[in-house]
Image (cartoon, rainbow, N blue to C red; front, side, top):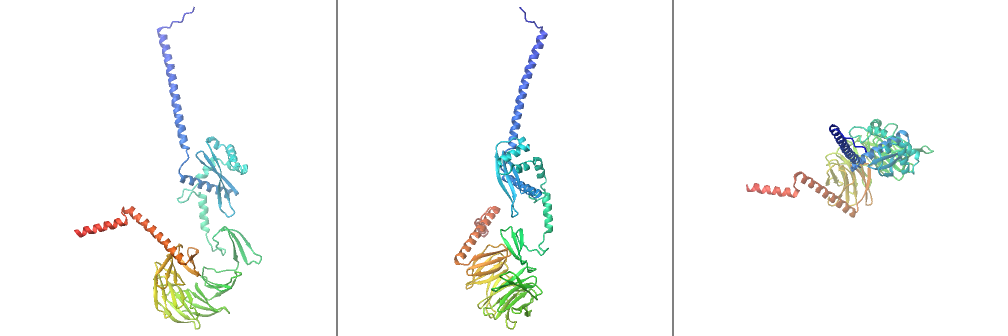
Length: 511
């Protein structure tokens, strides 16, 4: 029988100390494991929080805008037909396809969505990424998707870093801004006898007779343009017959056009400044110009048979009486002259306006004028003014429409007045620039404006009532908004301010 070894006192003490140290080490290791696990869990929570999808729609829109810009640059740079892009939002990947359409517009389409948790290393693996894209977008050839997927995340981030930091750049790159400035420096519509289309030209074709140019544009139309040389300045006046159109221009000429073929038949020259008004009376064409001359042209010989200078400033408008015996000319010299067409002599002068007269119209025994002095005036055949209609701005155009006189003003509005009572019947709003010309057929009014539009309006009683109701509702809304604004600024409504003023007034009286 083997007896257990007996330890000395010193050895027993050392052995106990060793066991204690081992126990302490085990406890320390356990504590470290717990701390490490807690730290790992905290890090995991932080990472998950960092990868939470944003709820800021503004950031998402800006990110999508950047994506669209990069796709456009890729298409333009590499001359691709299309470009695939993706946007990562949390654990969702949305794929977009951008292509350049026939009308020059870059269209971006959402084509696929991948949802689910993806590990980060998978996003950086190009082959795996291209496989996932190909699976989600199997309608597109896989090689195209793979070519796009081969662009690494680092390259995309580098492109994002090229976005310009200039204020107002709206996520444009420095290269785009430089290109835009270069285009702005080239901007002109004078070189090469330019014909401005207002839409992108996509194709042109010249007919076999070499008379017309056909243009396909981005406005869903094909235009027919005569190759005959037209005016070299803005066209300011028109006169039309059954077969021909006459035009006057800032280029100081008058041209005759065939209404069927669109060809320019002839050009009349003689004025030394802008041609501003044309009028056909019988076999004669009358033209008023900024050179202050009224010219009479024979339509058989196309020669100028008379040129009279009685105005001291530009002739703005011409009108003829119903019997065709007299012509009225309105001028910037504040006068309207009445001419005898047989003798081409002035027989009467109408005065009263304070400044330029832009338009003159004759209706029966009445002569109507519109002026920059913000008034429309009516004169009888004896030249006596018997009506004055006041506006808020310059009056550029007028016409008589049955019981109404209609005026177009620089305040962008059209006004309809009752001739019998001189009352304002209604104000028609719609244009956003000066109403420069008016025309009417039946109960339909046409208005042309410097806002580059021609609009039509009904002048029936029902329509006039509707215009008034619409305007009244608009004015009420504006008044309510203004009152609300004052309330926010002062803390009091208009009624409360009035009560406060009365209260203060009564206190002053008591004192």
